[in-house]
Length: 141
Image (cartoon, one colour):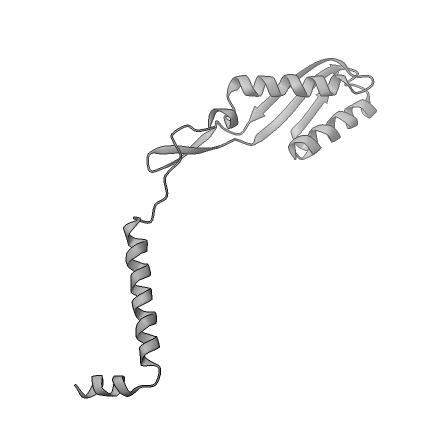
């Protein structure tokens, strides 16, 4: 009892009790929401980011088109190899995102690919596009 009497005489005790009550109320209110927001519906916008074999082939075609626009390069074939397949990240049983694999290397065969100037242009473009070191890009005619 002596301790409670000392607390009652402490200056500003009323404000401390109000603050304590407000803190407890916030904790209780926060606990009622179970700390979870509504998860995204399964597979929402997942397919557009997935790097399927078809998507890799489309990428190869787009790269071949770009290379064919380089003066002196024609009849272009491109092969892109990936490190691994796509990885799916799940949370609460729902797939929420896809981690796309990185590109391992690019091979280009084209008319004009034996020309060192054209080779260098192609290598520089692919290195810039895919952030690849030049030793992972092969160009030949």
